[in-house]
Length: 432
Image (tube, rainbow, N blue to C red; front, side, top):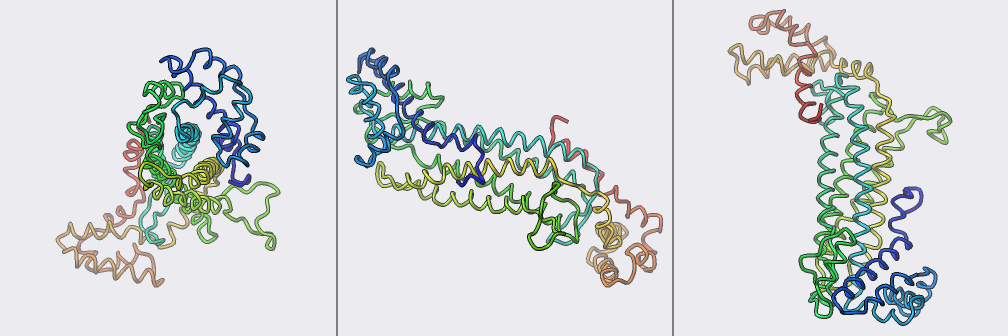
């Protein structure tokens, strides 16, 4: 991932230094496991820990000749360890190192993502309670529907990201597996106790059954989870982008002093952060199909999955980490305009209360079909600019016969629409 969309904390997980560090720890712990069951001398395992050093430049130099990254790494370790290096990698295969390392890196990346989601949830919750009662129009198909509150809008996003947090936690558990089972996964040349030992030391659990590789359905699930989070971020970003449109302008991204919106038009204040988030979501989602296709490998293994994961595991997690942090920043600093929300809601001159009138008529011994026709006919006059909804209702003979003027006015109380806000908040924010 390019530096522009990378945070150092996440990028570090996927750099060569961390990768080779994990490779070494796996090899050294495996040596300890083999020493404990008598496969190799205990002194050899001790020497591996004491003398095991690697030089990235040297590994890359060796790989140019061997065309094999794990062999290049082991060769460089051997140069530093000496004769005891012959006990390295006993009964192991490259996938034991590569797949277990990928598990560790994915777990490390997931922990950062989970921390980011926690922070985002806190920010959404704070702003939701701030605007719990900030009434605004709800829209369906982009058209005014009925009133809601901006706090309820935010509560919806909170619940969605809360589900993502739980989903990602489960994905972390699913990917937290270790495979040290040797060629085609039979443990023919390495005792299963070594896998158990390495797993415990690396904070993982043994893979139930590997075929020399960890089954890629686990990875596909993880990438899918990341992509769902990215899609939720985009849903939030689109909401903000839409509400920032000039003719709506109910919310606005923070525009800092000295910031420029357009190279040509000095007046512009564009939703560039949320537009960027829509784009980043596409990058993360691009990993899903390749991850699904990685599930179907030839027989016990092939390496068609390898190139995909070397690109998408870093890129998807780095991009999503950046997106979560950016979304949090947007929410923390979002400019919210309740007065504008109220002004926009009043544009249709009371039409947002049409359902209450419809229901009141059905309770006054009028069929739903007839009631709908009566209310719709009056509503269409308002659409055409012929007056306010309430005034036209008061003039309609059928309405006057069935609903008193006092009852009509009560139907236009905006608090009618928000009376269950506390109920919804209590379901979403269970600790409040």
